[in-house]
Length: 454
Image (cartoon, rainbow, N blue to C red; front, side):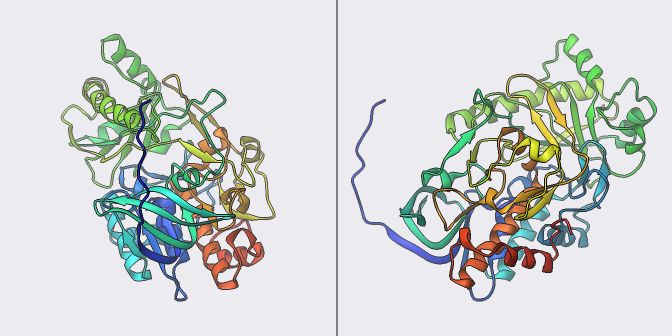
């Protein structure tokens, strides 16, 4: 590959902060909220023009409840939902046999609530900004180099929380990372889109009263009898459509009711082989997914009851990425930990979503269920190489199979809260985050409403 030599230059230091949160998705906004207070200067960076990340792309939030119907994600994530619900912008947590629970939200309202919280907490928000590099010294990441329309600048921080999803800060700092399974295959992303004009009751009648024909994966008919729901199935209908020459990239029909009575979110595009850390690959995924939407709409109108007069309302602004870089931290959570409902002395999050692997090379999915919830220890947020860097969200320290469970938004929000509170405790006690008293962190999490298995 042809190269050039970039000349060295002095950079302006835009800001010096106590806690820098990079990434304004589900984990990032909760991390910033948890870190703020007691006079600390907290800043959050986001590459897009809004906060919320995957909260804004039409997905339901899965698994606030565990498989036994008990709520295990509480604390600041629940308070976020409470704020949405107050204005009718979120549903209750509805139990679901396949996904533990569903919480439907208004994605536009989630953007507003996130910004409101940042303003209330005094968090400085900087959007349209990418992290291009890091500033390291010994066992510290002392800051980041950013790129924006203003050019190349530096931000210095005492503590940094990487909530980018892709582990951008950790990767730039040389932290050990992995991607995908043993062959490097990663779960494919999905470009969500919204349909209006759907006769939702007609769809409901099909899956409740004609369950043999409109089959649902592991989901009993009574689950759809009232309220909001998600369909995962209709495999026979997809086969009929494929026989008729319609190209469908998935083996299952995944449809999610919205907050409006005629609204369905469609989770059916799938582009195998996309790597969100490579712009050419990510670009290919976005283009290919938009082509797939046309074929999926043909399928829905011709083969799925209730879609006869439906129309596409909007496509979300970016693909939902299931998997990319993952940190290899001080503890790597495994599928065995999850499936055995393992408990850890250093627990900072209790999660319950099953191992849900969307296959890297075909159109199907494998799900492995737990009999109870499981712990995630603090060490999953800590890189081996640095003491003042925390990594929260789907790029925390998990193997390929475990990350297929911990990637959901409820868990990412809870991990963000643990990271944010750890950062603030570290600064208030004069130690690095890696060296805080774990019992102090656990006590604060419990005292502020988080569930740690008590």
